[in-house]
Length: 99
Image (cartoon, rainbow, N blue to C red; front, side, top):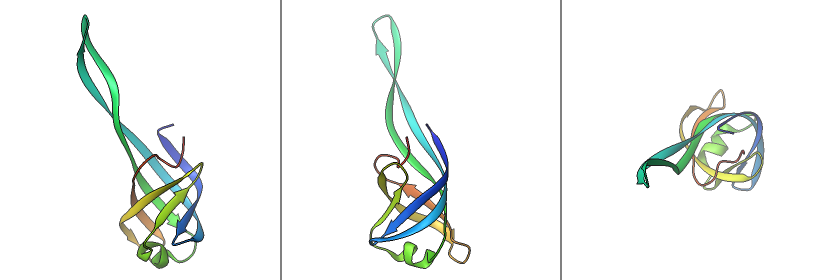
C-alpha cells in the first residue's frame, strides 16, 4: 500500500495523542543493465503526509521524540503546520507506519 488515510496515534515523548493521518509512500526505481536489456529494481523509499492531532499539537511539535503508530511505530519530524488547527505536515524516517 502506497497511501494511507485514517486513524492513527502520535506518541510524543511517551504521551499518546489520537490523530487523523493522510500519508503517502514513495519508492524510487533504479534502472540497471541486465542480461539482454535493462532491469528496474526498487530503491529507497520515504513517506510523508499530513496529520491532524486531536489534542495538544504544540506538545507534539515540541517533543524530542515523535512516532506515528498505525500498524507499527515510525519516527517523523514536523516540517510545517498550523498548531491552532492541529494540522501538521510531516516527513517520516525508516519504514512507513502502514503496510
